Each structure stands twice: as C-alpha cells, then as structure tokens.
Image (cartoon, rainbow, N blue to C red; front, side, top):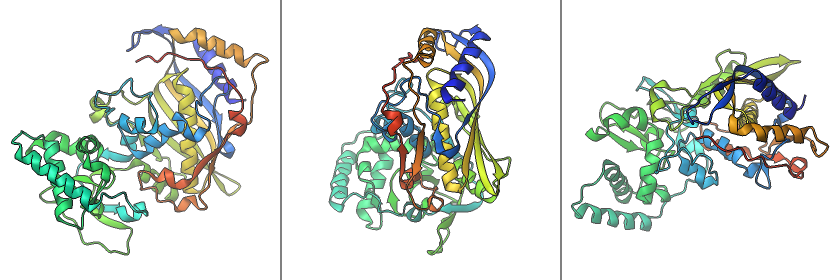
Length: 431
C-alpha cells in the first residue's frame, strides 16, 4: 500500500468514527483516539506524500522538513537558529526574543541532570575534528575596549552582560583562550547562553548569586562558543588531568545526551528493549512554548538472515493530521535512516501511534479536495525519494558533535519526485 493510500484511508476512517472536540486554539476538531499506522521504509525510501505539495524548494535537502530535523539534532530550542536556516513556521509560537524553550531536540541532546559522579565525556577538539571559527586578536581587543567603556559608564549591567564582559576579558588577556566571532556581539551571546549546558536546570534558579560561571574547560578545551562551553559551579568542581591520547575526559555529568546514549546502547545491545528517547521532561514543560506533540520514540531491531533491521516506533500525544502528520512521518523516517547509518543496520518499518488523532474543522473541505485529487486521473505517482549518505564510512562519524549531520554528506535521490507539480492545499495553522 502506498504512503498516500495508508495516510488518506486512516484519516477518512478516523473522521467517520470521530467525535467533535473543543481545543486549545478554539478552532474545533474532529478527533479519534489511539490510531496505529505503519509505513514501509526499507531501502532508505522516505514516506513523502504525493497527493499534495510538501517540498517548496528545488531539492529536498534545502527543504524546511529536512532543516527542522537538523535543528532537532543540534539540540537547539531557539527559533533564531531556525530562521537562520530559512525556516519560519515555528515563529507563530516563538517569544519576541525568538525563544521556543527547551523542547524536542534540546531534550534529546541536553536533558539537564543534577551533578553526578565523574563520567566519560567526549573532548571537544576531537569531537569537532575541524578548525573552529575564531575571532582575531584585533577583534577581541576592540571588543574589550567597548567592554571597558561599558564598565566606566556606571550603568547597572545585567548578569548576562557581566558574564559576557568576563569572557571577552579572559580571551583578551590570555592568549590560550579563543572565542567564536559571533560572540563578540553581546546580543548573540545573550541568546546562545540560554541554550547551553547547565543553564536551565542549574543557572536559571541560582544565577543571581554568581556561584556559576561559563567555562569551555568542561569540554576540555579553551574555545568559547555555544557548543564548547558550559555553566559550572565555582566551588567543588574538579577538572581532572587528561590523557592527551584519549578521546574522552572525566567530568561530573551536567546533562544527558539521550541521542548519544541511544547510539552507544544500540551498538552494544541492538536487541535491547530500552532504546528510547523521551522529550516529555515534566519539570521543564512550563518553559516550553508548546509541549512536545511527538514526545517519545523507540528503536526496535530484528535479525533477518544475519542482517540487523531497525524499525522506529513513534508515539504522539496529539497529531494534527493534515499539517503535522506528513512532516512527522517523513522526518522520523529520515531520523531512522541516520541512526541506521551510524549503527550499520538496515531500515525496516516506521510505526506510528497517535493518542489524539484529529483534523481541524476548517481543514475538512481541503482534505476532501486532497482525496479527490488522489483519486483523479490527474494524480501522478513517482518513485519515492531515497536518502543518500555519501560519507564512505558513516559508522566512524563522531555523533557526539551537535552538528554531526554535516559530516554525513547527506543527499537525496529526488529527481522523479521533484519533477511533478503537486497541488498546494494550504491548511491554516491553529495557534
């Protein structure tokens, strides 16, 4: 059964057995409960709908759909990062400062943890393996002069600004320290610091007392940037000597990188029933602009003729079937493919389980048009889009990097799919 057939049949059936509900947005929905679906994703074929237009760029790799997945894996909760990629659809929920809060990818990569015993941590120089963007000495000294003028102005400085000035002075006075050029701009620094390790679970509540400070030493480096710095306590926090030949250093754990743990565990025990990532962090829901809809997923492996095949089971508390579902299944298929490549397995099935599976009332007429188009002689079905990985050895990629996706050299075989002009059913967003 084709992707569109599975999708459209499921919604049509759900509508027939639905009940009317009021909702948070006041739009009204036709809702049904506990809907299970499955999509065949063997061969790295993405379950992209063909009955409506989903890709608004010339290639899938430039699409909002793919860029949002990269944003998740960066561990960001910032709408600014999305806007920098050209993705605008989260702006409806963002604050005036472009914050979305610690949702989705932030929880995947930076789930806050209480300080624990020493554990192995990937070193930043090794986990990047490339030269980091670095401001010049002249740029740093110029910024230091600006900081001095701010200090002489006798204005009351915010805690953020004080922290920024300390970082700039450190880099100016000690040549061992470097800094990302973007951090010479205070506004960028103030934005980035709210998404760094140690901020939400520790700094946010005790920031005023100055017992925590920003340090790249936590990651065993001396480069200040949003991915190489963390907030650490001034007292009782030990940086142990490191073996320079090792890829790891020992540090008290400040956060859980669920994605790294997932890959590590799958490589060690592929048939474990504990290969799960969860975004539903109860203690941080109030900080999120929108609680996660797709809040957990599980990997399930089986052996077929000596080859490990991996399926992904996605569970959603709430699913907007016309706007959300097509994106969700395509993105989680791509996520599954990335995981398969990192672990050396083959993709099998994408399972979906929707708690509240609903269609907004103002979407029903457009949905009927989409069904009619699918059943008409004007509908053209092409070969599916295949996800490609051009790196010669993806299992060697260091997935501890927040931006590891750039190393996989991803591309898509999408020529057939993109050559067909599909109707644009513009479903309105309920905010």
